[in-house]
Image (cartoon, rainbow, N blue to C red; front, side):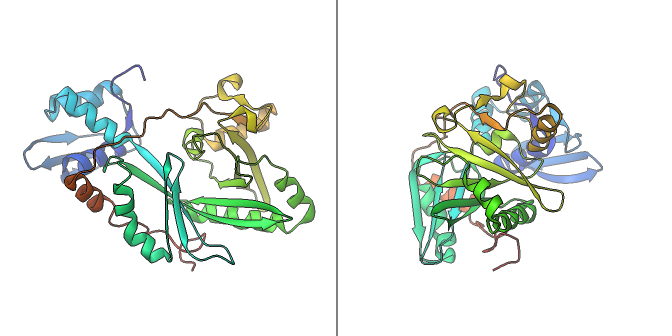
Length: 319
C-alpha cells in the first residue's frame, strides 16, 4: 500500500470509530451523523454507508478531527484491519467432539466435546495465541465427508449469506449422489493433506477474501456457487503452483484480487478464460501482542458473543 492510510467503506469507518474509540451516534438525519465519545471531540460524519472514503480523508478524520497522534492512528488502523478466519469443524458420523483451527494461525488448533463447550472456551483459547484483541474474526463451519474413498470437506462462512452458502452445500451433496457429477467433482485437485476442499461462495465474495482461507503452507480449494436452479459453478484457487499445474496469477488475465466471484463468472463466460487461479503466498503479518491480563480481558469482552448467529446445520435455524 503506497499510502500510509487505507481506503475504507463509510460503514467500516463508523464501526472502527464505535468499536475502537468508543464513539456512538448521538443524532442522525439520513447520512448525516453526529458522533460523540467520552474524552474525545464530537465529529460530524456525512457519508453514505457504501461510499469509499479516500485514504487521505481517513487520516484527516483520525488525526486532525479526533486528535490522535500519527503513531496512535497507525496502530489503530493496523489493529482494526487485522482479520483471521476461524474454521469450526463439526464431528463426523463416527466421531465425537468439535474442533477449531485457523489458516492464518498455523500453530493453533483446539477442540471440545460439545459445541457449547467450544463456544464457552474459545475466547480464552484464542487469547493465548497472542493475536491482537481487536482482530476481526470470520467464522466458518466445516464438515468432512467420504465418497468413493475420497475425503471431501465442505466449508460454509457464517455471515449474512450463510443460507445461500448452505444451499450450495446441499447442492454439492445432491451432485455427489449422481455418478457422473460425483466423478467430475472428486477429480478436482487435493490439498497437501489429501482432502478435497470445497468453499461455498456467493457472487459478492472477493477473491482476496477467499484466498485468505487457504493455508499459508500452500493449499488449493474449489470455489463453488449455485447458478440457476440446478447448476454449480466452480473454479480452482491455489497459493502454491505445485498443487495446481496450469494455474495462472490474476494479473495474467488482467484481473485483481479485489474482483468478486460474480465478476469472475461473467469474465469467464464472455472470454472462456480458465478457472485455475494462482494467488501469491500470504505475508506472515498476523498482528500479535504480548499476553497480558488487560489484553486477555479485552479479548474476552470483544468476543464474548461467539457463535450466537451460527447454527449447528448449514442453514440458520437447523440443528
